[in-house]
Image (cartoon, rainbow, N blue to C red; front, side):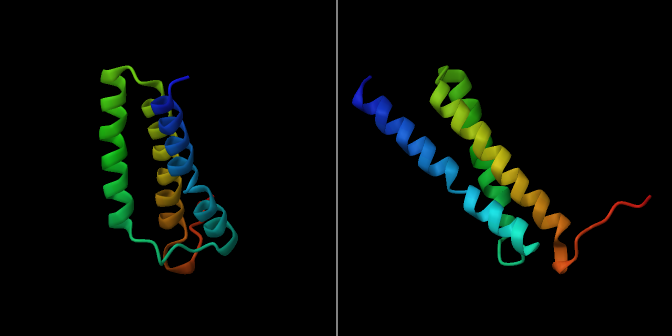
Length: 93
């Protein structure tokens, strides 16, 4: 394995996994009022562009990392909406 591939894989794992502690914290606290929705939307936009770039380049590391990053960040955005104003949104039955 080439050194640049190893560096790319390590960077992808570190960057992508950085969202996991925030997801656990948000789930435990049931609030995300300190996380900017604009930051999340900008990140989702950027990760989407990286995903498209990775697909065009046929680079599995870029594709996998950005699919996971999009999933994690979208989870945070969904949690932010669900926990808006400290209240969990409940389904009407």
